[in-house]
Every structure is written in structure tokens, then in C-alpha cells.
Image (cartoon, rainbow over all chains, first blue to last red; front, side):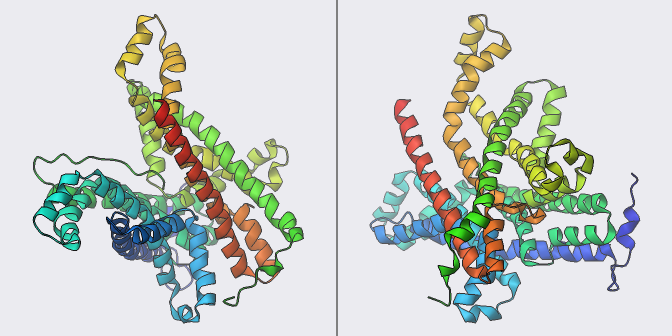
Length: 240
Length: 228
């Protein structure tokens, strides 16, 4: 069995080489991951915060329902739900391109995990911080905005890093609804060229360096925002 | 309601399409949990051995597996498995996707289980190991009778949580067309022209199982916490 990397210079039948196609697919992977990341951080931060609100049991119960709902159903099934079931129940959603459906699916799926980290972070914070905010006459919203959340997001940066990497890897599941991303490219290019090993090696490599880039970017953020003298407690999130 | 109709699902359809898939999903989960924990423990011991010859390959393996998507690994194994391999296993040539899925999951999950076991072994107090050594135990005896039983016990909730995640991940064998719970339901849905209902039902089934299991894990965690 010999290598044939030349296969990437072949025409794929539509006037572009497989190499161009692959980089295009990489772009889709990164686009899905980036958009989902924004959705996940927004909703994860919000839901996680709501779960820790004092004196509003119903809000935190609803937020808990959100987390359990999106955490206990496999991502692939959730993508199918967004793609097949949601447009059927809400006909308005039929106009939405499948890219955005996958972004919602992946974003909400990850938001449940991030909400869990945010909650753990808030609970890990010494109670005095909240009391200090109250003593200063801050409202609950202000306490969260100026005292609690800035600390919490620093504390949970290590698990957020691994969740971000998980999100990037999980974007591969988008192949199931024919988003033209890397995994989809790998499956199609392997079928067309029968050069599976080369194609899969290249795609695996792109995933690995993307995940590594996410890791470095988060490490950079971690260094930039760290508070001198404050040791950040690291916990690693499980799962993938 | 909402233009959905769940009445098409009769017991006949469930026993014809769904049960078989469900059994495979459970099988895959159980085998890869057991296999993954065994292989993962070996990897963890290798990483903690302090001998470069063992540490380096184990570290490369674990970090490598953890940096690529599971779907890619599933596709890799399916592609690389030679066909003579399936002929060695009775009934193997008809169940290529299923067999390669089992091997993939054991190999992939071992990396994640090994991280859990490594943390578990490191959580054991030094004095325990020293006590074993003072009693004249060999390295193997020390691990077998002192360290690993405690590590397993401490890590049991985490191991079980990982198993729940693993059960969710088994749906990804969709990529190679293995016949699991999701495939069973979606096949039934397609044949009877009700794909949306089938996916909805799949979500409900997965939810009930995973939610129930994580509730049990929480109970167990409380129980263990009291004993300690």
C-alpha cells in the first residue's frame, strides 16, 4: 500500500481540486463551531446564572429543566429534532437554512454543559462575595454583573476550554444533515477517490490543529484575565 | 397535535424494528464500558509507571484519541478493518458495522476512562501505598489489593456518568450504518412514513434512560459520601 497525496490535486468534477474542497469544508466546520460557541456561551451563561439566583425557586427550576433536557438527549438525535421535527411543528422554521438549525442544536446542547459549569463556579465562590455586593447596596443584577460573574468566568476557564474543544469536535456530527463540513467531505471524498487513508489523515490532522488552536486561544485568554495572587481552581469537564 | 401522529407505533413494529436496535445499543454500552475501563486502567498504570518506555506511548494514545472527534474514529476503524478480520468472527461478515463499532468504542472510551482512573489512583493517599510496601507487598499486589479497589470506589460516580455519556454517544454509529436504537426507530419511521414522530420518540427514550441513570448515580454518590 503506497501513499498517493496527489489525489488532493485531482479535480472533484466541479472545477475545484479536492484540496480546495477540503479547505472549504474546514471553513464550514469552523463556522458551525464559532456560531454554536456564541449561542452556547450566551445561553449557558444565562441559564447557569438563573440556576443560582437566590429566592426564585421557579426560575431555577425552569433553568434546571433546560439543562436536563439538552444534556440527556444525544446530540445526533437533537440535530435530527431540529432538522425534521421542529420545522414540522413550527412551519416558520422551514425557511431557516440547515446551517442555523445545526448551530442551534450544537449551541443549545453545549449550553447545558456550560450552564452546569457556571452553576458550579457560582457555588464555588465564597459566600462573602455576594454579601459584600449586598452590603455595598448593589441590586441582585448588579451583584452578578460586577462581582460574581467576572470571578466565575475566570474560575471556570479551564473547564470552558475543554467544553470549547468538545464543541469543535462535536461539530463533526453535522455531517448527519449534510452540512458540507470536514466529516462530510471525508466521507464523500473517500467514496469518490477510494483514497480513504490520505483523506482521513488530512481531515483528522485539521481537526487536531483546530482543537489545539482553541486550546491555545483559551490559554491566552486565561493568562490575560487572571487576577494576580488568585489561584484558579481547575476542574476538567468530562464527556466529549 | 402539531400535525404529529404517534399512533402508528404498535407493539408489533416495536418488537420488529426497535428491540433489536435497543439491545445492540445496550450491548455496545456494556461491552465498551467494561473493555474501556480495563484498557483504561492499564493505560493509567502505564502513564503513572514512571518508565518512559510506558509513559510516552500511553500519553500519546490518550491525548491523540481525545483530540479527534468520535465520528472520525468510528469512520477510521470501519475503513481500516480488513475484511478477513470479520471472517474470523462467527457471523462477522454480516455485522461488519456492529463489530467495528464495538472495537472503536472500546479503543476510544479507554482514553477517557484512563483519565478518570488516573485521577482516581492519584487521589489515593500516599500512606496507603507506603503501608502496602511496608507489609512487603509487590507492586502488583499493592495495586491489586490496596490502590485500585479504593480508586474504583472513589471514581465510581464519575465512571458511571461517563457510561451515560457513552450510551448517548452510541447513537453516532449512525455514521457507519450500524443497527442501534436510533437506527431501529428511524427505520420504522421511514417505512411507515412517520420519520418526525420516530425521532421525537427516540429523543424521549434516550432522555428517560439517561435522566433515570443520572438520578441513580446521584443517589449512589450520596450513599458513598455518607460511608466515607
